[in-house]
Picture 1: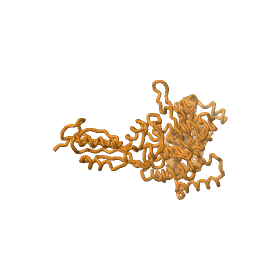
Picture 2: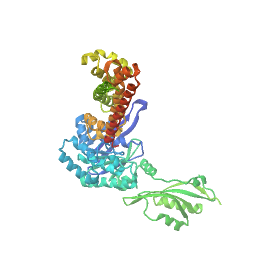
Picture 3: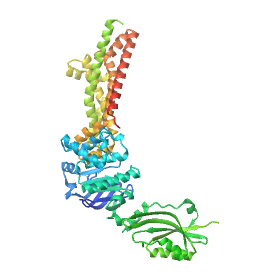
Picture 4: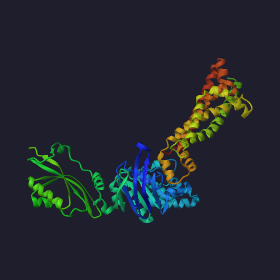
Length: 347
Length: 217
């Protein structure tokens, strides 16, 4: 449905040139929800805006429904944009218009008779669950309700594609969830193709069929959501996934840590679980088999597509030899293991 | 105060209202148009046209640099050409309007700058033409600010009309100067000021009321 072929975007020239996008190839299949995830400044927003040419690519092709958008005339492009819905982080509703009038905006462009507009808006309000709010002004609505109005407006002209720009970043977790589920419902009922950019892994996990990672203007990896986070194929993707997990070593531990082993110190290890990790209760097995005690400091484990993945910080208590065998055991069972340091025990 | 004096005030108030209302109306038409043009021709805006933008900017700045009293005299040939005379209430409308246009245009430009740029992006994503962006987004979103600008301009014009009165345009300013100032008639002076204060209060109140009606932010 949407295809980006070798798309690059450069701002400025010469030495000051900023490469916002570098040779991006992305495919969004018909009827799928694809999430692009990346840290801020990675080029996500620019990527999304090249699809409806709000940002004109410096190089490359943007193909939507078989048409190369970069070759369209101004008028054709404007007409094409009406078939591409877009929703934004800050909703961008008109404060001077009521909910009804905001949703009517794209329909006014179609020069539909008022009766038709009213029917269409009635259906849309029902879809987003705001029938009672038709004559409210945006300032009288909550953030989640405003985003629902924006969704209804984006859907008004029956687009084939919906572009979502960080749409849940201004919302609380519960509202985020309800907005995302609404998108999923729209995707299912209307067969709408959705491209969503976000920095939140939860959003991607909840509704995306496929996911791609963007970093420094490059698309690193694209794959099915179910296996993606658990089995990154490239080093960059692995590093990115690691970066979205929040593991912190407490200050007090850092003060007591040394880089090498010494008597009366115990290893602090970081265990990385991926899709390759053998699915067994490995921690308790290690305790039993090698008489090593394990104290977990911090853990962030996610579950998606039948796979556990994430990171765990733990101290291993035992003799140096016991600890070494335990570490070997983890590695044999495909846990990524990194010794962060050795924690001194003061007594 | 004698009946003839009261009659004088009624006439003067009529003249002031004629000057202020007509010149506000004309200055609004032209000032709002130029203010919008000034805004949308900026390099980052929908009708980017830097050369035109700079030219307009220079012209508006020249307009605002000329003191009103000098502008009135300088415009005498134009006034004669447009209304046939350079003396009287109707003649004063010409310099009042021309003096207010650049002032209004700048105020309107400032109002338009306050509109979040995201709304322009949204409008482009919906496929609005530049004309539709102006009529459906910029003007309605800026309406409370535009009404405020008109109110401010109108009150400034009440002031300027008094200055025009000094050189033969009639109105309340004329009475204040001739009877109050030159003949040391404190009662007339006070009455003039009271009427002007009430007039200004009234204009501001109507403006505030309308802003409240249209402001849903």
